[in-house]
Figure 1: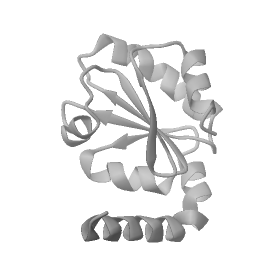
Figure 2: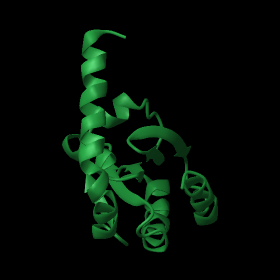
Figure 3: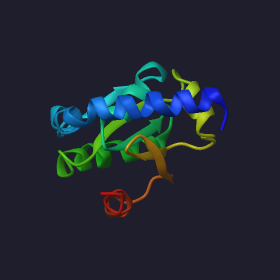
Length: 136
């Protein structure tokens, strides 16, 4: 591991240690809501919450519009356990490039700041809930 990688790891661990006391508060603050995420706010949102689902979508995408109400419902059902965000891929190109998103909708799942899963396409609400719950 190079020096830059070591420093990045140390910084990340320090940020995690500082945010441990606020993680539950951040999730409950967003309880039952889906936060708008941008390339600029993405990293902070992922780091501040223990379990995160980011809905990568675009306004012209029919399947994305079909997934949106399911995500809204899940954000209410899983309030306090999962923080949900939406990232418009037309307006934010950095995150889609970083995670090699080639089809939308794509749901990115993060646990403790680490990427752990992805769901591509418009699945059922029950399927998505099962995918997310396995990371609790």
